[in-house]
Image (cartoon, each protein chain N blue to C red):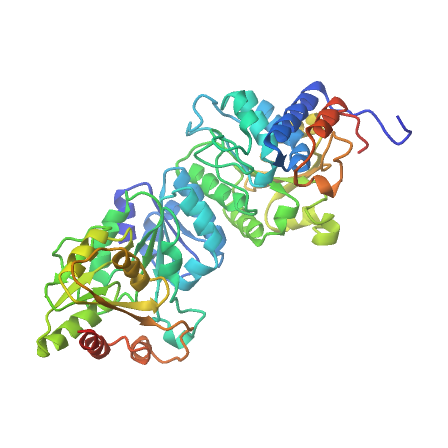
Length: 299
Length: 278
């Protein structure tokens, strides 16, 4: 996708660190002057991206999400956010995608950390189709953007309608019993949970928030106002991510009726087993069954 | 004068710039004066004789980019930018003050002529690599000058950027090292020895030259004839004296950063400018 965009727009530059052999080979061959593979030096890559962006380029940087958010954090804060540099950080394997490789490669605090930064936009698409809808919008969007990718070959659950816009929540399903709020791959979990809840005669609204910052306060408040129970679901630490962001909004709201609220995410630990992403999602109860049980316990 | 002292070789422009630096520092009530004083001739030669810029159009795409990566030396930069007309000279009187343009570290977007916000050390070189690569992509002939402190190059990112500049054969890029041999806690030798420094830069892919960083003529000679070698970034190691020109500040760690001083002390320093030992 970045290759296609770069073919149309001479401002677009790509920088990788030390990605898998053959990554974006067509881009490297066709537009070598705007394709850089800079080695395992994330801090340098971010500074370099900032320099290019300050000269008018739009820079897409790609590596594993854990390295892209941790190793070069100060460069992200200062070189990108402080300068409002148009750099797009594409973090592969956000969450527990790299389960077999352990905590050095898993990223369970990136949303919390990135959303605290002034001028940063934070997006976590549900699947590759949503990513395709996001990418063209990133070109002229102001300031830096952090994009948390999952595996890249997750089941497609997102749809064209309602239209995807950075900063806008997507109401995927309408119901009156409970509100399930998702970001990234947890949309799929919520959709399956909503089906299970139907069997218990509980209809659910699903509000999918691919953009965690800027957060769509209006959509959250509108959806929350219509239900008694609200559950957030995220493949992220329980601290400061989607659940934290939503909690901040609803805690300050003035609802007509009382609400019950629960955040589902990882406990405050480093993932403590290997295996697979799906296995760890089950281990930390990020499953349709647990979402269903949580909603029922709140109502 | 005692026997060890000698009259400074600093000319009237160098002395005038130092006077302005000390006055600005005094009005601000805080800052890094000694770190600015070691930079004066470097900054002066760059802005007087080397850099291509238009102060009335600070975003001119063809300008040379000058990044003061050792942002704490900003007093020297501010005085030169004001001197060249990037902003009115009375801004200097608001240094570090609420409502002023000029902070204790330079900020991009706030100060005309400042190419990048620096202050946290080790950021300028990578940003500079980005500037230099942009020139290559767009086939522009501007050059990039990144000015580093010696303590600053303890930071690993400096060497990541140097490798990158070497790999890309960025001969439009110049690293200038203000090698005053002192950092905050103590001497460079005591905190983190850098020698053999020229060999290090050479090993990372740069063409290297060493100069007396207070000699205007030596700096002019080198900085007017860049790159040193086609196909290589240049590293200019400038041997300097921290606090140069002010006797009490020269090689005196207590003046690295200073606040809470008596303005009269600075006024006395200004009156004795140039009576230096180093």
